[in-house]
Length: 380
Image (cartoon, rainbow, N blue to C red; front, top):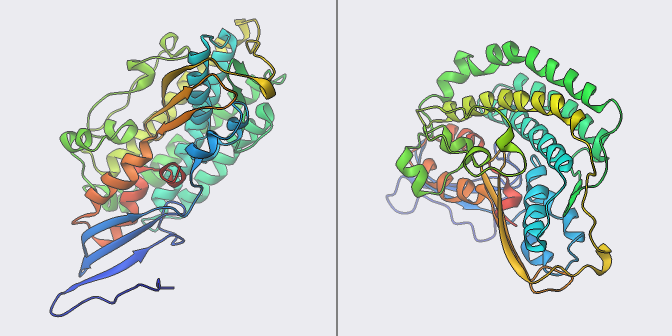
């Protein structure tokens, strides 16, 4: 249905016309919309139209107890919620002057890398579907569900775990969990050739994705691009390696890169990252049984918990890019200010608008999915 203020174009002798894609169009990444000015099949200008999803998280968090906000933060990026929990907890811990126990830090890394795998599987399917390939979408969603089964097993929640708290994690891993995780990793590794043949080297997909939405190194830095989208331009920056947190400095992993900066390069980086996450999880499985001790540091009663006055900026590497929480406390039982520095704000607004200009209409949805943004993070 057209909005009430819709004005038909062309006007006069112009060949340009305006269309909306979203917020419920299947080629849009979630509840999000784009307003396109087109000349024939070519985009003259693309303008993002956000605000259809969860809004005002940052302001809501100022009115809730420190512990209550842990139920809010995962919803800022539904496909990859674990980094939200961890980043918020790290910021609060820094203000409090405490660290999570070593065992809790290893468990957090386990959760983060599982979340990265689930998010990338989801993106593989979504990106493929924008080019008319639906089997990879079914595969990606089905394999992601196997990861969600493990989340339900050790956190109690399939999507929103609400597992991290300032000071550590809520509960210990259940008996036999590491064996289940190892079996899942074996299965995902066995699927590598299937995904390669069906998607990553499939000439239908390659021809549609190669050379589309090209982003240069200079433009990537200008627009604040981070994560896989930056690494697809040849810049090997990863917060896990370049500004280590938790126990990432004790792990061995590579930083996958590509050079072309196009839609195909972006999905190839994510493909390689998934298998790097498996490599990281193998190391966690080998090491975690020998890491003894508590899983959380004692904190005051959460219902009457006043965090000392101060501020902190804690950043992590999410599947979407660099994610950070800036948290300010005035010494009360609620945050004075919370600000989320999320990668999707850069990728889904200014970068998407930049790449949409000059693209063909059939490639717009693909460009959006190749940037892999979280719409609720824009609406936060």
